[in-house]
Image (cartoon, rainbow, N blue to C red; front, side, top):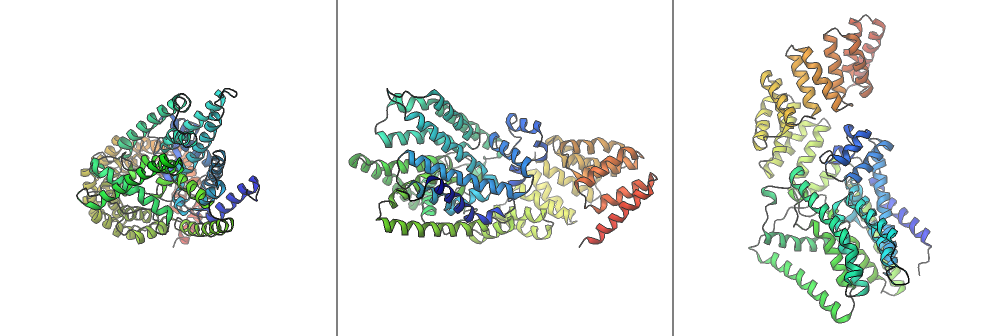
Length: 611
């Protein structure tokens, strides 16, 4: 019996989790947190929330409940990372407590120990410290709630206590909510069948299978939709995903052992692991596959002859939950690695339940000592691992230390350096990326963009043309090529590139702004106005477009119309010396000398404060 009350155990889980993940609470955003998941400006209105649900492609992945959560979170704490990190850590702790509740309902020994193992194991850091992976934490909370609701429904399946339609309805609603947060939760109905077999032996078609048929239908629909989305909109297709059946089988067996190894000895975790493609002509991968089959066969034999179904049930739950990430279905992360810590966030539950139950077989003193040492060790590792997620520079430096050939880390580090105003440092990382992964249209484009920012547009043009040759419908590359052409006095070609970028991507605010700017610089100022207006309509937080719209109106002598756009630009970017200086000149031309002097003084103050 636990010496602590349930409330005290819940408090312990939350306190331990917050302490272990403290470094994540002070971390910033990484990789695709912005703009991939933290709600983009064009989706922050009520109409944007409607688009999240009704327009596949409006968000990075079609997980409308997840992105609705991000929408509400943005209303609470805007672009400040702390709120997102805190919510993710709290979701993780909540999932751990729900996990304990599930194990208690199933009468699995060591329920709270399993919950603490899950909460504090460093393999969960990628899912908890990475804001984008709120899809994992949120979906798992809903997954466990759905499982608990279904078990409540299933426990009333006898003559004296007929099953409750209300409990069933609640369970399936929670399951659909989980699917709308992340499709990996589609494995739940199969897991419920495994649990029913573990508890009662041979399954009854009427009691065990029939109630779950609608669940399997929902799972199949979600899986097909997600696979199609990954293939068509995210890009999980092409030569990198063209694996043979043999390679996929070998890949799956290797992944299972890889994940088990990281759970047993989590000392070499990485954000991006080496991408290992199994070679069917080698013996070792086949031996790994044979070992996997042999282990399952041994567990099945043990279950049949001993009557102890627990080990086989744990293996089936672990492997079944891993199935979507084993290589049989193409997902975008396979582009750079076939394994990732966040893939085993949900599957790890089976491992922790089995491990905790096994630990309870130790003598009481040995159980307590082992548990304390294990939990303290795991919490220490988690605290250390969470520190690597402090910012993109720390994360990718650690990743490249572990995996120097991680081209995606080089590429993303280059992007982060450009965004940080360090384009000169980014060049080497983009060049390293192209050495490791020739033919990357995205990297060619980003290298061209970096060269543009450094004033080396003549060097940028070949890279941007290569990007468009590799990917003809690449709107960003067309836009950047337009920038390069304008910088090298090839205005006609620049205008054509901006127009092409807009044709390829009509909602591309940057291209609309650039087309307006290029049109104005070509002496057609009046024609530039609609382009600036369109850029602002697409992105109301676009300060540069507001400023250039105001400048164009000023050149046309339309001061009254221009001033609100100057004010909007300064509201969005109060520290812009250029905006203050340009506004000052416009105010002076309109005869508002006192206001002009005030903005001119502010421009000088901001200009002198620049490093």
